Image (tube, rainbow, N blue to C red; front, side, top):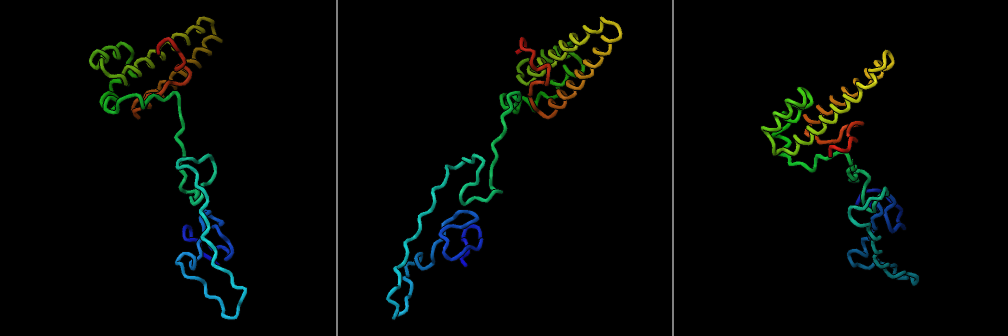
Amino acid sequence: MKICASCGTQVSDDAAFCNNCGSPLVNKEVETGAPSAAPAGDTNAQAPQPTPQPAPQPAPGFQGGQQQFGQAPSQYQPYPKYDPSDHTAEFDPRDIADNKLFAVIPYLIGLLAGLVAGIYIKDSAFYKFHFKNALRLEIATLLALIPAIIPFLGWVVSGILIAIILVIEIIAIVQVFQGKAKDLPIVGSIGFLK
């Protein structure tokens, strides 16, 4: 039995490639250049076989969901998932770190306090992003109060909508403290504030 030099798997003597990793198996006699010693009386001795050529390797970084030759499954590097609602990479990390507390003010205290904070840090793009998200939440809250005009059923509908908006606001506050700039679910699609 031969042993693969790449992964250590045992393969049969007549195999040219490893069954596990696909690496070419090289005959030690051919590799060292020493011809195999044939018995003196054997006229059917074969000449040494040429070294098998390695199989073509896929381009580096190409994964396509299939195992690459010579690569164990644990070495896969998954592609990062693209999230169109995540804008964190568009902002300066220093801006995010310096202005997290200011960016949470419009969510916790309100838009008026957010405007005062905005005057103090008018150059922060991270703050402006979250101020616009807080403004979207306020508009959604006003729209959620409209069904309250209708007695009983409207009150229930408005209460449910306000509870949903409260959950979205908690999500927004958590995202600010994590240093993320993501569009909010449901209310993030209010387009005139972009």
